[in-house]
Image (cartoon, rainbow, N blue to C red; front, top):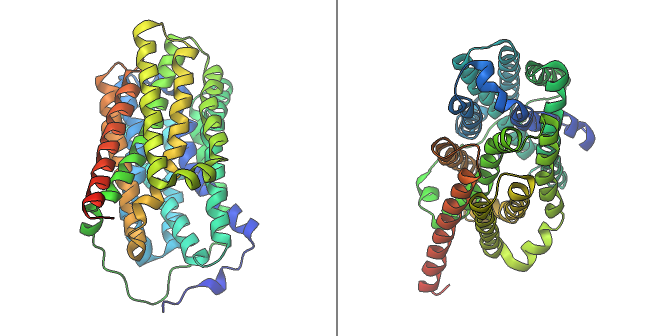
Length: 401
């Protein structure tokens, strides 16, 4: 049996949360604080909206793909060096972002910022697995992490708009650098190494996971749900600020209503999952994405841009996102408990690549100041997911399951 450094991780649950939660939250805040100033960035950086879109897309892609790099690295080097290395990289990139006016440099620094965030996230969740895998506190920590992260899309843009209004857009990146520095200084004397000291290392085999149809059906569903939110926050500033005329603060408050719908729906997640099961919840989630997309398309064809044309359909999509994300991880990973770490890394990496590639392509090719990229993404990915789900059901029926 592998030996673990549990003897040096004796923190109470509140202390452990204060150590770990900031790194989890800051990875998301790097996206949400920046969102209200996105429409102004082409002029600030003297570049095109497509290049500014890369600063959103690359961050998400690298955040997911980086886990495949830093996961094995944390197994060989340890959680502590990966955590603090990631925090240093994230902080340095944040400070440099606040000081640049070059579009190319800005894009490159966003990639470095995402790499730092990926390293810190991997080390954080690996530590949770090391210490709390067989303890009831583990479920509490994951639940609290999910609850806290649900508030970031609601509050992050509001905070980002207020900071940008009073201190300028650069202050948002300065804040991220300061906050990660505080988190690292707090963790430095307390975050002891938790990597297993000895033990055999499992062989990493991607093939059985990547050829598993149920894994793909739930991973595609996760990609559809998360990508819907990604395309929404990629297009919402241009629709609501540039065309409808909301201020940055007004936009942030409107944007927050979508996150609040997700938070409210999360309170009832256990009830509908218990009633519908994993597959039923996934199918209903995709149905709501299709319904929301249909209403958005109808609004584009028959009305001028407004709050009522753009936001209420997104509330339906938000409910579908919660229905979907409540079951996709369990559904995708249920047959891979023996290689859960590898399967989890692939699950998040594939989602990030699909969202970044497909979402960005649609935002760039279709008018980014309309709902059409969101309509196209929700429709395409929901239909692909439902098609894959149908193949799973047909195969099980043929096998008599």
